[in-house]
Length: 118
Image (cartoon, rainbow, N blue to C red):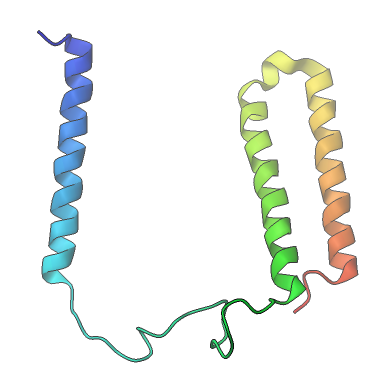
C-alpha cells in the first residue's frame, strides 16, 4: 500500500504529466503550418549567416555574455541573503553592501570602457 503522503505526490505527478501531454497535443493539432523562407532561415545573433559557422564573433557578444553572468550571479546571491537577513545580523548586511558596491563599480567600469555601446 502506498503511503498517503507519497500517494498525493504521485497523483500530482500524474495530473501534471497528463496536462502537459494534453497541452502539447492541442498545440500540434491546432498549429497553423505555414512555412515561410523567413521563418525557416537560420537566426544567428541578429545578422544573416554569410560565412562558415566557425568564424570569430565580435568581442562585444562575449562582453555582454560576461556581464549577464555577473549580474545573474548577483541575483542568485541576493535571494538567500534576503531569506536569512534577520539571522546574519550587521556583519551579513554590510558584507552584502560591500558585494553590491564592488559589482556596481565593475558595472560602471564596463560602461566607461564602452562594453555596453553598440
